[in-house]
Length: 64
Length: 211
Image 1 (cartoon, one colour):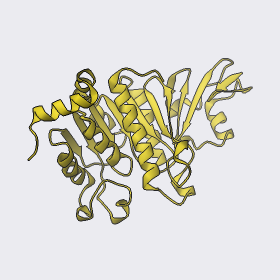
Image 2 (tube, helix red, strand yellow; image 1 turned 90 degrees about the vertical axis):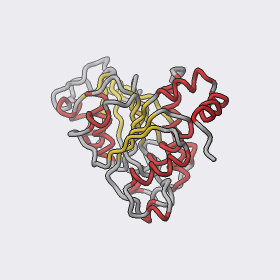
Image 3 (cartoon, one colour; image 1 turned 60 degrees about the horizontal axis):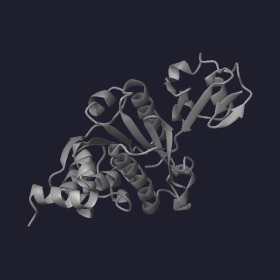
């Protein structure tokens, strides 16, 4: 299982990019941390989620 | 008659205690974007006695800003950096400031932010918010960044929270209320979010915080 924002999902094997798109995120508006380290946007496509990974996705909305 | 620097220092020490005030007055904080969030954050931090503020915005004061941003009718048309510095000096005459009237992006983030201890993200555009947070966390890992997402509309002010995302990354807001899906930005709710950001900055400076 992969933990994303505190919830467990059975998605090991999927890339970060595939997960983000499937979950409806706009990849231009997110910051993603994998096991506490920030992932650059260039890493989304080739980073494959593994069981035990802990992912934090922050999605920004407009306004300030 | 404006009190001299020593009287000013003493008054702040009476409020915050000498130990904390020493830390606050040594801190340099960058405020990126001087709109509803940034202009309010800057004033709160100036009042608290932060040593130096680095203020960055490319834009000019517009009539549509005045319902929530800390500018005056007489300042319409001025650059926000220059207008805010005038207002801050009236509030906190011994505050050190550095202003940059530029558009921020990956080409100048490092240069503009390298001297800051703590960075406040106070943009209005969601992609710009994501860009600066990604940049600081990956290229400037020794800095703290306090960002904001979700403060538009008239929803309850109680939904605005501060969340520790990772060691040096804090996020304020409800993380949902996009300006385009709401009636727009309402001063009081934007100010709640700006206060969360300024408060988190002071907590980081205090070095005494857990979450």
